Amino acid sequence: MSRFFDAVKAGVRGAMSQFGAGSFRAAGKPIACQHCGGGTFQRRESQLNTAGSSALGLEWMDKSAVALVCVSCGLMQLFGKEPERIE
Picture 1 (cartoon, helix red, strand yellow):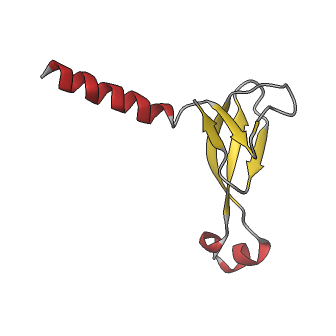
Picture 2 (picture 1 turned 90 degrees about the horizontal axis):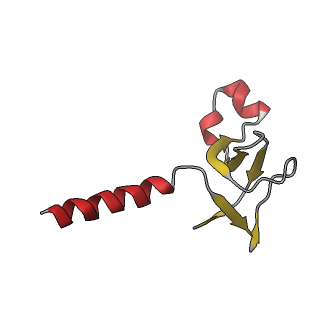
């Protein structure tokens, strides 16, 4: 039974690593911070609202982007396509 729980713990650690800070690649190139040169980012979703949809209360219809926030300096970079996480 102990091996079962060890396997579950390893799976949870692996899943949680996808939510924490990490390194990413876009178009085959590693992403680096444009300000400080750091390579570790926190991934977030960012809503791309337009003035028209905001005025009508239809923000939920707007597209979203992936935001990578540098853990060193906080600079945020937006991506229209999902960047690949580097293990």
